[in-house]
Amino acid sequence: MNTYKILLVDDEDDILEFLSYTLIKEGYEVLTAHDGLSGIEIALEKKPHLILMDVMMPEMDGIAACEEIRKHEELSSCIIAFLTARGEDYSQIAGFDAGGDDYITKPIRPKVLTSRIKALLKRFEQSNMLSGEADYSRCSLIIDNERYTVSIEGKELTLPKKEFELLSLLYSKAQKVFSREEIFSTIWGSDIIVGERTIDVHVRKLREKIGDKYIKTVKGVGYKFVD
Image (cartoon, rainbow, N blue to C red; front, side, top):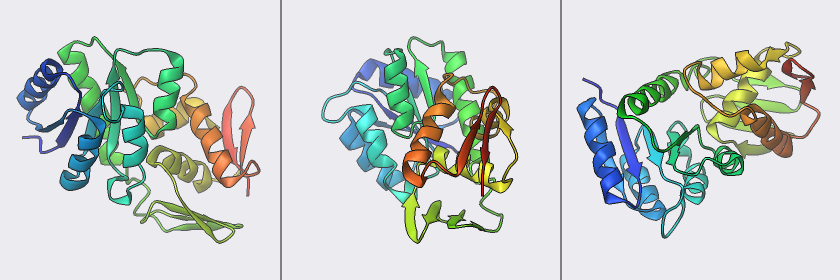
């Protein structure tokens, strides 16, 4: 039986009931919250493996709640997916900017939803794929895979999980050009559908935090780390 713990955050009771029923049938342990603030409290207390969260909610919306959750190191490996009727590009980009791992648009059939959940949890199993390797230290940048932190010129940064995994991947083989397809497959998984700009958004956020000189764009191919 599946022992994964999933937190559902939505302000509509009928949606929570439908999602709970669907996921409990699959063997998951399900927790629920009606708004972003209570979702954060439950996440900190129960440490779910995955959070499925609406965007538009009272008290605190899903984007703000995701940003707050990503500030807590003990939840760094938690998968966060947005399930919302809002499908606009800018809304999806805001979700990924906040540290979300996936963006699922309503309505969605139960079988498709459970398939997406399984794919996301497969990513959870692999989220520590680099954590057993030795910490990296190159130039003025040091990656600590145990603590999910990056030190640059003596200043320590805590990155959202996907940004950290992307940087670790590029950093693991300096000067190697990673294609966009290879990055998608390694970081998000081949079964997960994400927007075309997802990688670009994460690279932009990384450059804002560590500077422009480390990650170079290879036009038409992908990205590489330059030491």
